[in-house]
Length: 149
Ligand code: CA2
Image (cartoon, rainbow, N blue to C red; front, side, top):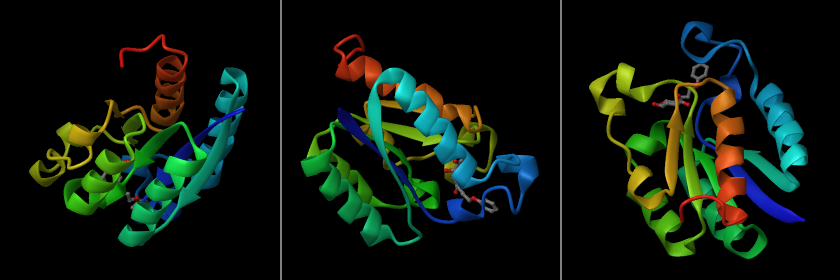
């Protein structure tokens, strides 16, 4: 079975508990369940992780190099700050999809820049938890050579 890593960054463990007007009512566990159901339909195995620590995200990206064929990443606020995540994604050279629950371009200007995007195959934002399911579909297409590489 083809494995994909779904990596989540800081504060996403609080989903469903705070700021539902921005991030909705789903918890991260609920999003994980939706991802597992979608991955099953697509014939993919999912490793789903969350950490508040930037270096742990770097380590998880490195781990994916050995254990996975692709990465879906919501790096949270590190999206807008982390050269280390940019470098890690470039270094492992796996197809990566950047996801965001919110439409970051409708929000504060500091969310309009991403260090992840130049290292990603594609970006999906603004669809709430469905952003993750759309990312899984896109990644599956890439891995089946049906998506633009
Ligand atoms: O829209 C997204 O998915 C974000 O990656 C979420 C990040 C934010 O910094 C990015 O600009 C966009 C923040 C995640 C914080 O999640 C919270 C959940 C509940 C309460 C407070 C924060």
